[in-house]
Image 1 (cartoon, rainbow, N blue to C red):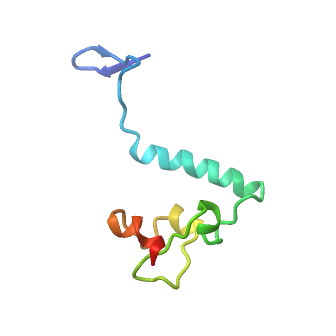
Image 2: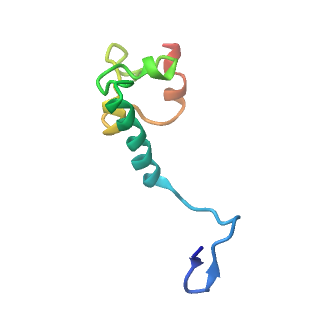
Length: 89
């Protein structure tokens, strides 16, 4: 399977943990773009339509957050308590 630590010659096992970080974003976008190609998602639609709950930036409650904005990191929302409670505004 490969080495989890080349210097120490430690192999990858079923218990080896990997940090996926930005790699997962790429695979998520591949899936989203497949749905766009199939006409199931519109990049410029309010993402709330697809999430099943309202997602708003508390600082800009009248502005919709689109799939495109989330995909390009331009939604202006930040992770944290305000984001989790934004749907209650």
